[in-house]
Length: 139
Image 1 (tube, rainbow, N blue to C red):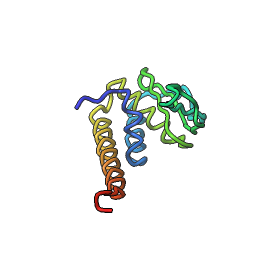
Image 2: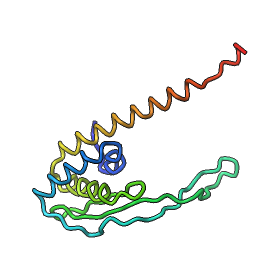
Image 3: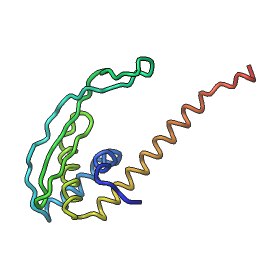
Image 4: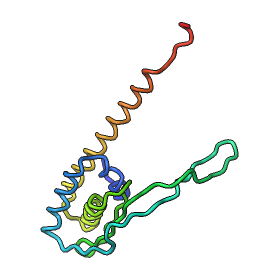
């Protein structure tokens, strides 16, 4: 499977924070890293599509943390859910390293873990929903 850079941010949030931080620390020891934007909290409006009116509206706000770094001259960015400044910075370092073609195999292994974790979570959720199915023919 080919990993696209635009999927890194999302999939790296699916695995243990310690694993992401450990790899970011390894990259930090071997690359030149400049923090362009320290981890900063923001709120984002959450858009929802209304199928009746065929329009969008904003249902509320979500708290996110973002960071921007430069790894060996290549910009890296991350945005994570909630107030998680260390995770945002670590994922930004991994994103920048990916762009700078550093530690790609290690990053790809973490992304694969994220894919497996997401798949298991979805399967578990589907099983929970399926367990609530009502068979009206039996009623």
